[in-house]
Amino acid sequence: MGSGSKMMVLATVIIVAFILQIVLIGADRHETPGTVAVAFSKAYFNLDVDMAALLCSEMTESEDADVVDDYLTRVAAEARAEGFDPSWKKMVLAHIELETEMVDENMAEVQITCERRRSINPVFAAVAKIFFLGDTYKVEETLTVVKEDDGWKVCGQPFSLSES
Image (cartoon, rainbow, N blue to C red; front, side):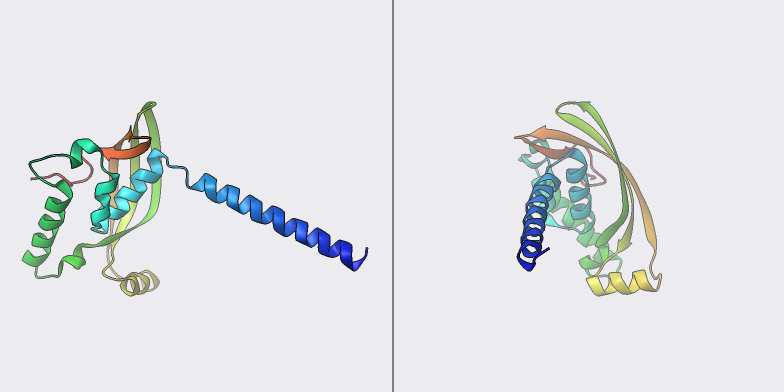
């Protein structure tokens, strides 16, 4: 086999691999009830205000109160009462397992089971994982996910978001 034909085969393999990679990335970005439940859970435990974008309109359009802002204020007050900075309450999720049950075509129940660990900053999380430091806490929750505006949103009573 000549040098030119080897280069053609190599170029063809690279082009096919590139096209396959683009197709797989596109398929991975497909939004499902499970991906939304995981994204919301990570944002919730990381005290990320962007979790509001993953909530259904029933929860975010309340004129009385902003549930996300109320939750973040409540967590910050708890942290200060314990003598810590609010970032002390941030958690990272690991070992996430999902079980999705479609109620109908526009509603699903997602059972999320995972572990959460304190995550003040990325270095703390890495050191804690390497040296088995810090406690892990089990999380088991069933999230109701509904289809709104051609996208999935978390609805109902997720975790303790709307506790008084």
